Length: 638
Image (cartoon, rainbow, N blue to C red; front, side, top):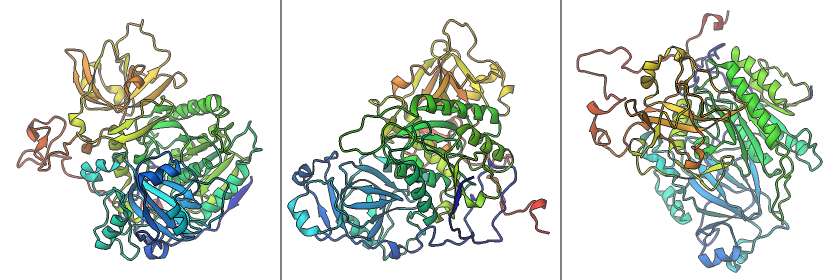
């Protein structure tokens, strides 16, 4: 079996760190603060060592006028600031912006971007390692952009980038307290003066002379990651690659090792050589392009720079599992993945793409990146092996921490053992549970492009003027608009028809369309213990929140961010184990926390403030404390 092993540095040991569980792979481990040490090989530990570019007005920082932007003939016409960055200089920032490389090349989140008129949306929140821009060695290229005379005279042979305001309103998610600090700058006078020099709304440069508190690190591609990507891409992205067997890269490893970050880096790197890349999401806990609970297939033509909640997308094809783990329905989970792989091979793999003039990327083949779940013990290991057999990858990226516990069923695949990263300091403030909340809130407040078809629905902006409780819902007739209501997950088979309204009221549901459903069948919309439709003939378009149910009128109210044309064929509601987070049910307009939408807490349905009535000790009302540093008997060294 061909394989490559890259130099690895052992993880630092901490006696208080819990040992991995052998069976409970679905639980969120490392929810508490990380006790280990951080190394420069993984994250930049000193901002002053890596952030060496200091903006200076009219020296290396130039505010562009409308006339100068017209000379450059860019796709994005909004005003911005041009930065002249010498080779090797770098800087990091907090916020969001559009970025265009006007001359030279830069490295951004491990991806090399060259001169182009294309603008890339960049998101750099405090919940993740900050975006780090590094100017690469200047090499003249055939593709050039016309520049104003004053820029040519004052910049020399440096890399030029244009930064423009990103008016997608992503910072408005900060109306929720849990998201309020994600895009805010650190309070520092020097930091503010640099931000004013740049002059871009929502963008705040990190001052390299300031020690950040709480500690924040910048994103720097690990050497073993870079080596694996370079070797893999050079082999599988030439113009002579086989059309019959395109690149299929599978990323696997335990939780909190950087697996999802590496999968995103792999996707972005391949997009520099291919016009389109497919992405198969197998992780139902923390999905890259959708809220949790779904396995999904996406086709992308632009790299993504930012954490998952900054790029929600309507998938090409998806299926709703309804849980953050496949533990309760492993066979159904695998059948969903088989259907998605079949869709990729028959509809996407060899679809031809007409490329624009000057685009030298490959357009006749669509490679595939597969991101797997981080449950690698017990049943999770069996599922992971089945996924490998279904996918048949040409390259496997295995984090070396799982080398002893994960085998490889595909003997013909090129195997790359790479170094896992240690958790970022931000993980002690933003846990896996927080990130699932971010994804759901971002999804329900997203506005998707109605001009895009269902196969490529991208978010165009966010709207948080109103909380979800004040959104106007869709009113759906249970008789005319709903064919089936299906409950899936442990215990739902016991729900009687008379109790259905209790189960789905205020529930998070998947909107599913079944191509084989018939309007002529006179069947009840709910059958106790009903099964999900076949994944070969059904798909999940997105999620909705059942905000209200009126059985007497036979109507229910649904909240969903999906455009109307996507809802016409969705006549099946699937209720799983996932619920809307509490943050999505409160009214962020009420700063005094007196209730929801003008109603006092005593009249608010579904929610209760405090611990119940005075003097009454309600079991389960208080927060449960969990100890994660206790060893099981078989984990104690003898």
